[in-house]
Image 1 (cartoon, rainbow, N blue to C red):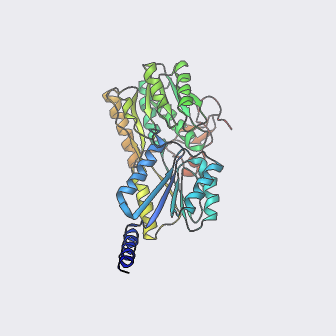
Image 2: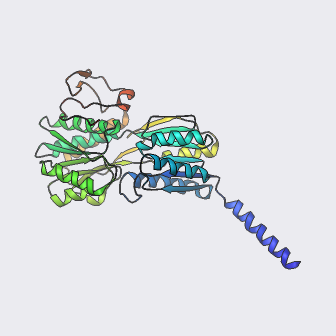
Image 3: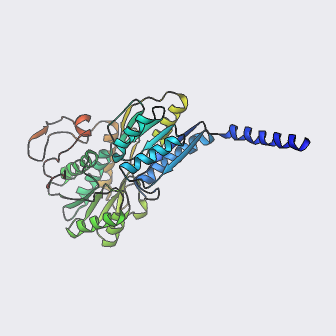
Amino acid sequence: MKLKSILTSAIAAVALGTAAIAADIKVGFVYVGPVGDGGWTYEHDQGRKAVVEAFGDRVETIYQENVPEGADSERVMTQMALQGADLIFTTSFGYMDPTINVAKKFPNVKFEHATGYKRADNVSTYSARFYEGRAVQGHIAGKMTKTNKIGYIGSFPIPEVIRGINSAYIHAKKVNPDVEFNIVWAYTWFDPAKEADAANALIEQGCDVVLQHTDSTAPQAAAEKAGNVITFGQASDMAEFGPLPRVSSIIDDWGPYYVARTQAVLDGTWTSMDTWDGIGPGMVKIGEISSAVPADIKAEAEALRDALGSGEYHAFTGPLNKQDGTPWLAAGETADDGTLAGMNFYVEGLTGTIPQ
C-alpha cells in the first residue's frame, strides 16, 4: 500500500506540473517557403520567434513550412485547428480562399491572413505597404544605373506585385527620364533555380540593376557572379551580399504585429480587422544603404524614406497616367487605398502587358 501511495502521489505531482506549465494558447503559422529562405518566410518565422520570446510558456507555437498554395494548405490549416490551435497565421496570398474555407469549419479558431482581402468574423487580414520600400529602391536604381535598364523579377501578377513594379518605376523615372524597365515573371514565390534564370535573363538583356519580388537570395548570387549589377534584398536584409551587389533592402518586420494579435487572443479582445502598415509604423523597414551608394544618393533615399514614413509624401502622387495614357491622378492627388489594393494596371511608360 505504501508503494502504491508513493506512485499515486508521484503521478499526481507530474500531472500538476504539466498543468502548471501548459500553454494558455497555441498559435500556428503556415509558410509558403522554407524558414531558411533568407527572405519572406525567414522574416515571418522571426515574427514567430518574437511571439515565443514575448510570452514564453504561455504560448505554444507550431509551424509548417513549404506548404503549396491551394488544397494542400487547406489540409495543413485543418490539421492545425484539430491540434488545438487557437490562432493561425497564413502567410501567403494564395492561402486566401483556403483560410476562409477552414475558418468556416472552425468558428472558434482565429485566423490571420497575410496580403489578402477576404475577411470573416474569425478572419483578419494584414499586409505591409511594400510599395513604399519600392519607391526608395526605385530612386536608388534610377540614380545608379549606367545602362538605363532596370530589371524586375515578378512572382505572380497580383496587385501587391503590380504596385511594387509601378512604385519602383515611378521613382526611378523621376530621377532618370531615360530609364527602362524589363519585367520577367517567374510564377513562383520561392524557386532558386527559376529566380536565378530570371535574373540572368535580365542581365543578358543589359539590365545593370535587378529588383525582385521573389523570396530567395538566388538573384543576389546571380548578380554577384555577373559583376557590375546591383540588387536589393527582398523581405529580409540579405546583407551577406553587401556592399555589392546588394545595396539596400526592404525588410518586413512582422514581430510586433504577431505579438499584438497573440496578446489580443490571450486577453479575449481579438476582433476581425484589416491592417495595412508601412514605413511609419515600422512594418516596412529600409535596410542599411551600403557604402557602394554615393553619399548624395544615400541622403536623397533616406529623405524619401523619412517623408514616406511621416506621411508627408505618398508614393503614388499625381500627375500620373495609366499605361494607355488615360489620366489617373491629377497633380498633387494621391491614390486611395481601394485602388491600390486592387491595382491591375501599369502606369504610363512601362512596356508589356500584365499576364492574366
